[in-house]
Length: 190
Image (tube, rainbow, N blue to C red):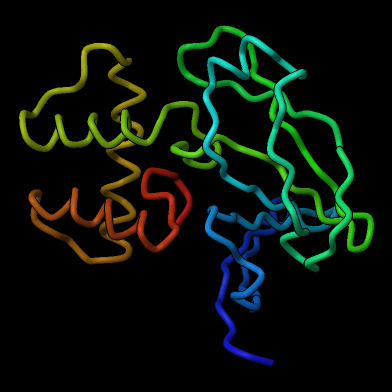
């Protein structure tokens, strides 16, 4: 057995958390997010896609099929339906493709790159909102103030938890550090 990497997971129903060791060769260039649920492991694979194309084609959009299962490295993946997800700029949900590995039961959900888990706004919009608040003391006019305030307060809470009480000019740097570590810097959970 070679080098192992540590991945943090949350058990959704029980509210507990823990860690799991994974073989880094099972990880490829696209981002993987592990989400531990009561039915097994669900993994989210971020891929470069255009939301407008997904909106136009709906379920007929040709999603890239993963070559291997992210969990057991199995070669045979089955289509496992679609999940309706909402994104900014679209009044209707977009259908994201899921695949299932028959060997281990892992469900892989495809997700557009550039979006944080469970967030409808693009990462660049969230980053711009926080930068605007820190540098100019105001919010972006195109988005609701309460939504931007939610992101900002969650970020400040996480920055205090991970880095102590930093100066205002270090908050954006801490935001980027958390992203680099694979953490969602604007989620309410720590």
